Image 1 (cartoon, rainbow, N blue to C red):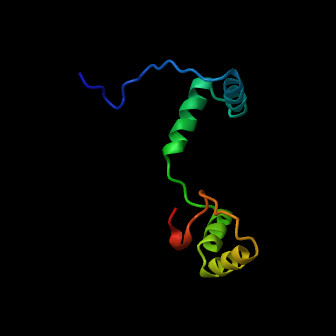
Image 2 (tube, rainbow, N blue to C red):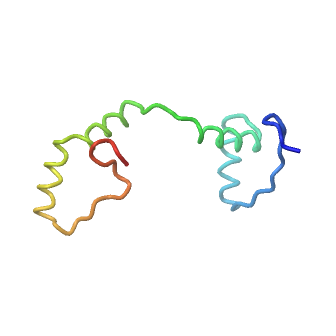
Length: 94
């Protein structure tokens, strides 16, 4: 029989004591149980959030054609510098 989306599921998790302490401190600060804190954080990780102003500004700079010119100048001075694999690519692609 398939589970319903509203069914409660019990999981046994293994993680470090250091992570448990971080979660417990966060739960205490947000006045949630440890279980509620873990669920809250997991649910947040699946929510799409809009970029804040600072993130949007950085994205615009990183994908700007002017940035390509600066990159090219840097490469002439420091040709052995490798691009950051996590940096946004020109054209808004990652």
